Length: 219
Image 1: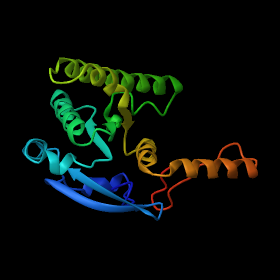
Image 2 (image 1 turned 60 degrees about the horizontal axis):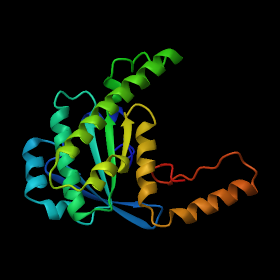
Image 3 (image 1 turned 45 degrees about the vertical axis):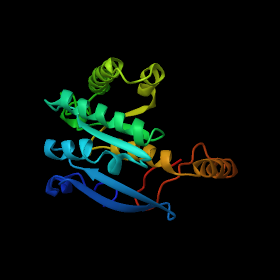
């Protein structure tokens, strides 16, 4: 909602939980239609769409975005669900891009103090990295335990997952979604060439291409 409906961080407190599956179509760069399926995270819904509607949900997927609460007491359950998603993608959409968002990093201990000093910012970053490392280690361990998965997949899957740490209270969410959109724009290379040429012509140090409706960084 913050990205595509221009909500502020305060506005999000009025949002209700996703019930089952919510579908929306978003136009980006004036010429591409992005169909977004928002899947409810409550157990009653995850068991339904992750076990009874596999093909309907996972076939033809370009990008999987898995959002996990960084301070959830049920993080093992969340990662178990993520592993199920990976298995379904391997069957129905093996070329899909995968993003894992460690969300609500503002709830970590050093967040409130991170704006006051460089030392606190470093401590907050370390805390995030430690949490991500914990998640990555668990994911790899569980994948290695699976019997019906080939060794090449086991050794490369973690490198295919884009891990992002996000919060609604800074630009991290926009940065992560910019990377997601960049991964699914078909002719991104064409935009990169044009923006590089423009940058050289105007003798700028750096040029960034933003999507005009969402202000997401594309190139």
